[in-house]
Length: 350
Ligand SMILES: NC(=O)c1ccc[n+]([C@@H]2O[C@H](COP(=O)([O-])OP(=O)(O)OC[C@H]3O[C@@H](n4cnc5c(N)ncnc54)[C@H](O)[C@@H]3O)[C@@H](O)[C@H]2O)c1
Image (cartoon, rainbow, N blue to C red):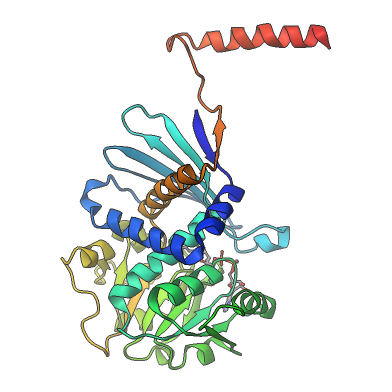
């Protein structure tokens, strides 16, 4: 049997442990896997673009497990009552190919993206960072805010969204968080001014310039999360020109990240090299650093394994009859004959 984890199962895991603890474990799990980066068979994700958005498949494997995520990005989805980003994924056994786990990954993606952002900021932001600008206050925003508050000690958030209702929703959710002050700003420029960290989380399929060169101050760390697709960027190229830029998996980020705007030879550093001590993170208080995040399959691999283990401990999840259970593995047809007999009986009895 394959284990199924629904959205409700994931929400119950988070309720049982609390958001800070799940984020802490998520960061630890992703960090442990990034530190053994060479052990993974990696590939840039496969994307199907349309004028509405993108649908992507994200596979990765080591010598024991294989995982993939299905994820979309449709910035206009709110008009259809749907989130911009929706996802699910599979974890399979490498030795047999048996799918062990089928899980929702919409909530889980928000958790793993926030945990990855904090993992990067730990290496790249100035020590003692306390103020963060948060531009784009949609579905991902609470997760990023809480991850930076609990994980990195951010105590002041300055938030902005072109949709005032999105900022009001963020304020409502964060209003009761002890030790966290949230101020809604009238523009990106106002939110960014004087911030230690700037997180951009907007969804718009165009080359937006959420952060322009005059807004980027020495010593800032930019956590650029929303530019994750060809033709969809958030940072003005002049900002990247002045910064040291860090990415997850370079072949994918060259196509999808904010660095798609830069020449092929533009220098970037993969984050795993910083985590393993092979490359420097921030080297001075005045340096401008950018984590050009697009989301990499390994983060989902780590997240799927963590959620599987947490669900197991809490007795959550259900069994899914996804693969035929065959007394003789060469006799797949027997599955049909057994079903035909019971279906005939059922129809006669009806
Ligand atoms: N890097 C990653 O791993 C990763 C993971 C998940 C999502 N994402 C990306 O993050 C982005 C946000 O995702 P979401 O689920 O929160 O989307 P969402 O649609 O729920 O929220 C996006 C918000 O951005 C706002 N916005 C758009 N243009 C803006 C602008 N110019 N200035 C200020 N606000 C603006 C919108 O009004 C909306 O409230 C998406 O682009 C998504 O693709 C990246």
